[in-house]
Picture 1 (cartoon, rainbow, N blue to C red):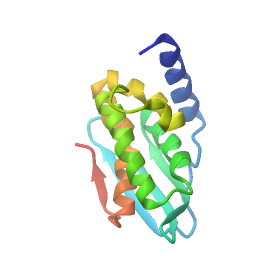
Picture 2 (picture 1 turned 45 degrees about the horizontal axis):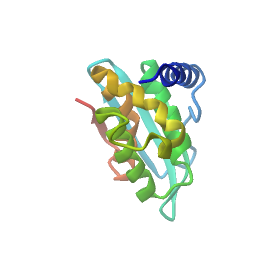
Picture 3 (picture 1 turned 30 degrees about the vertical axis):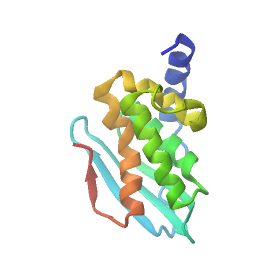
Length: 150
């Protein structure tokens, strides 16, 4: 990873961790799920309002490491006003990015989410970065039960 991308990764992760976007429960949510990473204790919930197959509002709450919180914050901004299918496709691309690296996905096509490419250099942190995404997937599937990234 280039020095510039590494600096941006650290800056964005810290910013979204300190001041997460959409850190709230969505009133009148139609979908919800809980996520937990037992390896490090990250725990979060995702609530969203799905109308006509489109994510009209989304929020998250919980506690965890900076990467977990930043990823959830970035995710909520990225999937709002997307269809269920668009959100699922984005999840697949982000998951490939954090597990296999930026060589396997065009990072520029991911916008701000491209900064998560830095996670691929730290395999132990992949579950932190993907927890919110797995929880979103569970919420969209109608599984209000807990998901685990074990």
